[in-house]
Image (cartoon, rainbow, N blue to C red; front, side):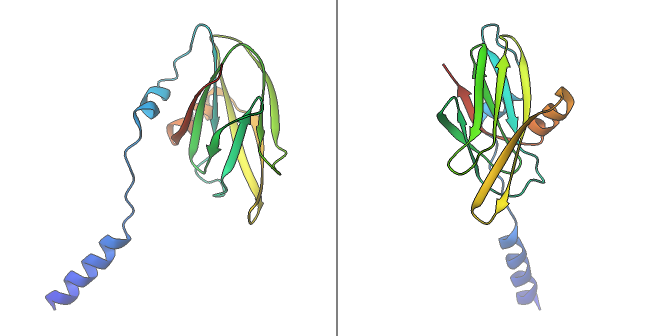
Length: 144
């Protein structure tokens, strides 16, 4: 009987998911600090999003990908910037940002099988912070 109990415990523990501790930049990004000479954009995906990988470009430069329940902190100079999906993904948003300000965008990915597309939409401070606080950072981008 003890063998069966030990086997059951081993099988159950083998199914447990282990989560890596968040990287140090995750805690720093969640302090929501402004920068006097740059704007900060948080690009976040909800934890209930489909699991598509969504590569993101900033001003025609690849900056990383978002996944379900993740976010990016993007630091940019004041001015106009374009965030867009990559390859067949036609989602995009053009933003004019000011130094010393924080902006929150929700990134949604949808599609069929490997054909993913995305959308970018501004969200209010409360929702933006909530998405960031429940997510894990995928990139800290310092765009020059």
